[in-house]
Image (cartoon, rainbow, N blue to C red; front, side, top):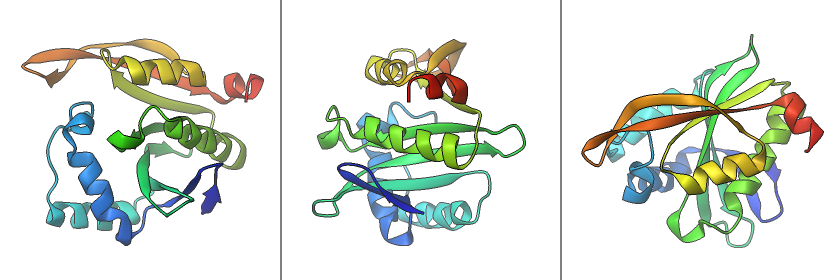
Length: 176
């Protein structure tokens, strides 16, 4: 699948993307907000890429600028449930491209793809309670907070809450 959004080309992650994706993952500003805070080596990334490339449960997509083919970020699909039509989603954007609407473009592309083309009913995500930029984005996109996973993630020397959010196809279709 390869599709274009207004400023981005979004496509399935290929081997040529794995170093960009690894460097983004290892960026401390990203790593501190992920549920897995461990740095990834080149060898680990290659083995992970081999596994995820054939996985039916997880997929990774990259977003690149149409102008210059510059890597902007990655979009994650995890725990793909084809029976109940639900999936866990997430996006990471390179620091220099944050707060410029790229995450919104990525999510909007995947809303159309997942809800309209694939027939999914529910998109799920979790985010750290103190990650206000992400929470505000998700609320603006139509996600609803469903609850708190209390003290679920250890960061900065203490346990932190995770906020569980979801977006249903019916809610999105009311305001696509």
